[in-house]
Image (cartoon, rainbow, N blue to C red; front, top):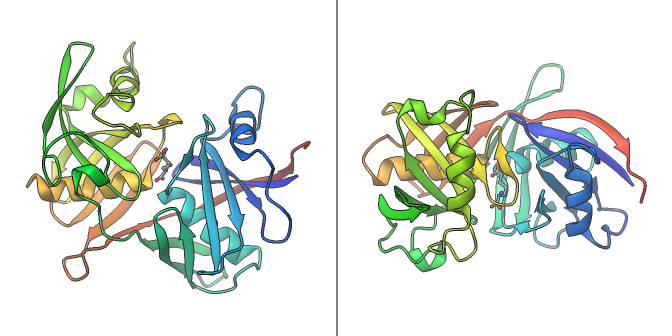
Length: 285
Ligand SMILES: N[C@@H](CCC[C@H](N)C(=O)O)C(=O)O
């Protein structure tokens, strides 16, 4: 099976082109095996590029634990670059079918024909508690108390098709060099908190200014990652609904920066960032 490894800000996935050949029979199992950083290729998950009857192409995303997610922000930017560079869809504006519907993607192509940056219309945020889904109250739940292992966090919940919990913290909390990484310790517990029946992606955020945040993420099904695109969009929305940040936001993630804009005009969140191909290879079936 041929594959390409790509990343958006270090959030890395294995891409398999299934547009002209059948998809792997057990993608959940393949994702677990191929994502393993010691015994596999090493990635945060697996992305299948499939034919679509409603859009130019369809994306399916599996986390490193094999669970299928509805959407992946860094993944969709890389998928758009892949289909452009590999000649599957030679368009700079394309439509991608995902678990949260068809999304529009714009490629910025430089003078040398290289994809420089990618902007995705990530659609409107989902703010109704039962649709996120969460048992927390509010539309959306804002800084609602969630207690895990005796510690209470103020959680703002937002869905971008997939569920996110946003928690504002002091800079000390985000440090990864101290023993017992707090993001991993508390993110792993919050991921499976009973308030989130489909588990949740957890983001710890420090506000620098009304237009700038630093964040680290514990992803549902993949653990610590260097960036999360849907998560950065959720952080943009959470900042507005809690009055902490503005509608245009730059998020600094461990793997680099993303630009977000929750548009007042159409209620959609726009995400702009890079997409990089690392290498291609062959995986023994
Ligand atoms: N890294 C992604 C999100 C991938 C899916 C997520 N772990 C989930 O289960 O919802 C992104 O860039 O959005």
